[in-house]
Image (cartoon, rainbow, N blue to C red; front, side, top):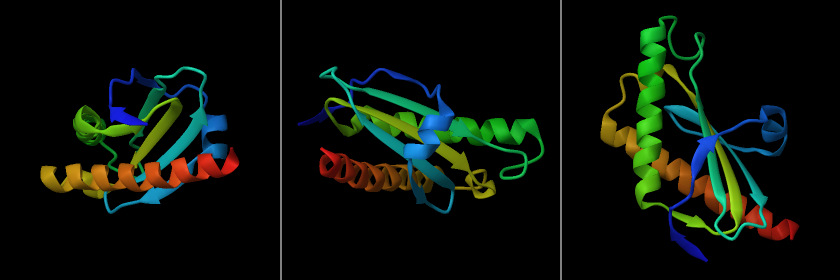
Amino acid sequence: MIIPSFYPVSKITNFAEFYSNASKYRTTYFLTYMSFKKTEDEKGSLNFAVVTSKKGVHKRAVKRNRARRRLKYAFMHYIKTAQLPLGIEIQVLFMANRSVLEADWDDLLTAVQNAMQKVISRGCSNLEAKL
């Protein structure tokens, strides 16, 4: 069953386990890693992180922080209206590119929405295949 998101959103804590189970999706603005786990909790949870590196985005911290904020707010905007599956722990990581700094806001929102829809559909089908 899918309902509008009331998920508690928190940070990813165990990155080693996350990378081993994550699936990837690349856009022009960022690379998305997503991991899914079945939980006993009926509601589920959502964990996310945004990575902006010196090499990938910009050497100045001000620019990296701006890229991080833009991706974070685009993701939060998506979560407000998202239809997320119940009983699943979802972990999302965005690795920003340099192009996220010059991206139009509407294009960035569309890219986040498309990436999330694509990876959620792929991840849920993989999770159902495992069960």
